[in-house]
Image (cartoon, rainbow, N blue to C red):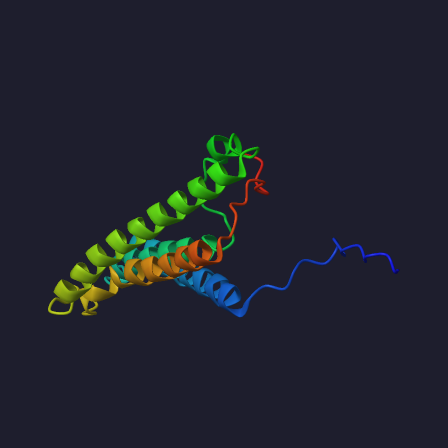
Length: 174
């Protein structure tokens, strides 16, 4: 009988491609946003003129950045959680499984409601365009719809698989 190998804690687990793409997208949004605002400030205060599209572009990229980050954070368990309430059920496995299922159902319900509202805004936005850049205003609520779809799909998979809640978050503050 061979001993079980100890995990190598010095090397992190491989990051899924979707998460790496989300991280790059957030970084790209932040970089373009920072550059646009910086150039606008320099042009406005240094030369008396600015970039008209800077505010619209920054707002659009900020919305996309927030929802991409929210969608990427859910599968990793990085959203705010009230684990101290559920942790009281640790000694009672049936109650813990029921609480976990209820939490997953509530997350799924919230994702459906967010997705439905975002879809309505996307449908309305296709007929309107932004004042300066002229992009369809549907691009503002679209990331909320995509985020709701990702989080809803993750919650549904966790519910169907019976994935237990992670009560030991890596964060120091809850």
